[in-house]
Length: 190
Image 1 (spheres, one colour):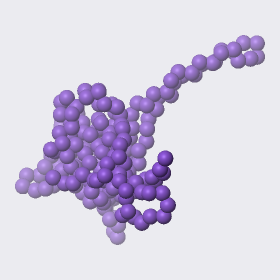
Image 2 (tube, rainbow, N blue to C red; image 1 turned 90 degrees about the vertical axis):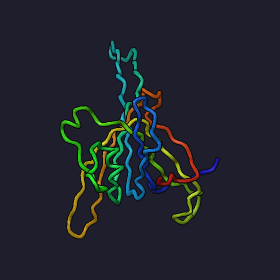
Image 3 (tube, rainbow, N blue to C red; image 1 turned 120 degrees about the vertical axis):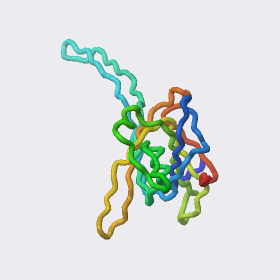
């Protein structure tokens, strides 16, 4: 079996979901200059019960652990207003390619869900150069909602937006929290 190490976050693709949980691929947007993506899985640990008597353990029962969700923390080197709208809700500034954050009343109805696909480069085993990818691991998170958690414009530093994305099962489309496969190429902007 070949060993193909993964190295470097290459892209995040976000696609709005329709009311049936299906991705609206014509509306997909790309974060093409990612800096970092951290994925944390949330597990609901099952209860554990012990029965003791006479100074000894008589029985022990452990319930199953369940994967309940995943959280992605993502930073990108540039602001992409269209992709930010998919993640956070909000709207456009008329006549501009800018972004307007959602109002409190917009948020009362809830943010729309989206699909997130994270691409990580894979390399052959051994010494290789960056850019010599053999293919990409594509992690698909089927039902996501997110926020733009912040950015820090300071003197002498680049402004890098950070996003928090919460991922759960897509029950409308009967899809799991996440899956991964391997693809030869990265998606391109439409």
